[in-house]
Amino acid sequence: MTPPAPASAVTASGARKAPSRRRAGRPRKAGVRHACGQLVQAADAAILPQALERRADLLGAPVSLPMAQLLDQRAGQPLGQLLLRGRLTQRQHDAGQAVGGLWRAWLSLAEAPKPHAYVPESGSGVARPDVDPDRWARTEDRLAQARALIRASGPHGLLALTLVESLCADEVMPRRFEATWAGDWPQGWAALTTALDALADHYRIPRN
Image (tube, helix red, strand yellow):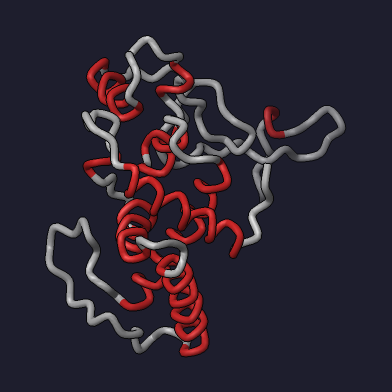
């Protein structure tokens, strides 16, 4: 004979109520959560003063700059720094971002050695065997067109090609373009901006 259910397991209507189960795993942390369930992190994270000073140096400005500008994500990349310093227009910056993404995609498909790699890689500069041949051909053709366009953009095409590769693909700021550089480099700036203008036309980036 089945023993009667305890009174706590029977509702007022007489239906049986399932016993509560203990939740498995660690206890849920207390705190405000997003709709997805993740905890809301503190909005005002502590930032070292040295980091802000370094960011100000990269922008060639005093630390008294507005906090929003010092924390601008674009200041973490050479192209963004030149944009925030007023040396590039938004259109030139966007063209540099576009060709940089294409260049890095080609490097990835070719398994070319990374410029900042700590350990030597075995890249050969040719398409990986697991890459779709059509994708490789399209990427290589697009990069070849961009490189030819840069070379033909002005009288200093080879210099422009080197600068665009350094700034846009490798994300390395040339020494003479740094905010702390004492002199000027008209030839370098002209080569870079002329090439980026040609790329902006090629990518059909709207003019402001």
